Image (cartoon, rainbow, N blue to C red; front, side):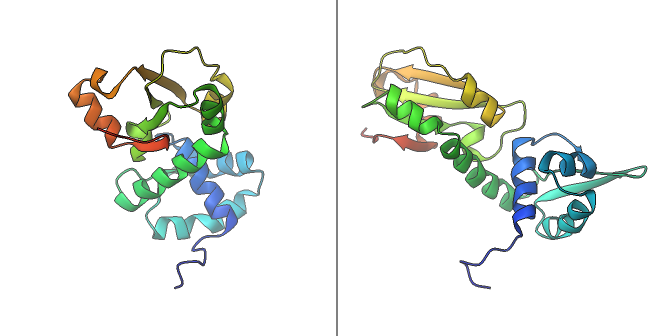
Length: 179
């Protein structure tokens, strides 16, 4: 298979994206169909390929098929990490932060950056070399279905060592890192 060809249909990608946003929740195939505005049959036909790649789990309860993001599969977590980063950019959160915090270094860190977040996790951002600023993040929290936690640090030296390692293992969204 060629790397530039899609493995999945548009609907399968939408199902995966929805399950990433709602990681930790069990959704019926009917709920997924309603959310994505497609027929339940279309969901039923799309699920087997996602199961084959172990991106989701299927649980049958009576006559209802419940699907959930597969947090036990490393490949699923890696793809969720990509999905999370895509959502950060598509939500225009990064554009907003660049506008509001020019010159600051902005890093995404924590469970969201690693793709290990659930629907109850927050999004952790570190802003280095900037003073605290009140940011209006409600619009982005709604789009991303997560609370956004922004930590401001005046310099790299002001960050405790254990937290510094966590931040440095995150994803650089703006600026550069010089130690």
